Image (cartoon, rainbow, N blue to C red; front, side):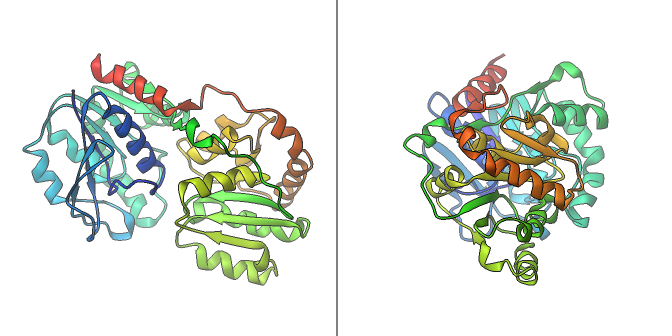
Length: 357
């Protein structure tokens, strides 16, 4: 098959957020058996054409104020000439998915990666702007792939869609990446956060909790975003700045080692369609604390993953972190097992069946 994957990112190895990880993993696996092309948008400095691990990549100039829209006239014109067996578009809240409907294809698959709101006034306005167009895009799709039951139910509530058209396939984890990694002995305990530094992600709750935790507990934050300066300022005000460590642009291997080394992983986000970060932490045997919101609620089992009501009460967060830290050794002896965590090979196999049928 000639397969086209479409999304708003530039397509990079060992970089990018959840959607980039998703597109890269399924594309590389599909390319072992099929002719796979990825259309993405990119700022200046990226090659226009590239072949990466068997995947043909075409990048297009974009208009992306505030990391939103990701509109590309070059991509639109390219779609008018494109001809593929399957076109799989990703990301409801950016133009590439909707533009991909203009490509000639035998089958059109849409992965929305949708949680219903934007995370800035500009992005929130896009939800309203895309509603008429977005509805038509989803109705035109042969299949819509969601990554959680939460995302599925949200789409059914907000759009007039055929129930039989929606298929839920969780995101994947590359279990081979975890081989050879174990928790290292360190002279401190850590709470780890991985993700964008945006207010809706809730990382500021962890900074607020830190002064109430033992002095040997550090907060490790991996990611970029507009909250960085605010978090640093608040940590200084609370006299815990030396116990907060910021990381960005870490290698994949280094990131996974940090997940293994951490004593608690926390994701207190208000909106998530799945959370690969939680999936990887649980795969590594690291206990998690999540906000009981959106798809994060689906992770809570009160054995390996624990939930807190939103908005987060700091004293409740402190108490739960202390409880989990006290039981850390127990978590190393048991692993979280769930149908919500699939290997990327299995995710790709399920998508391939949708493409073929």
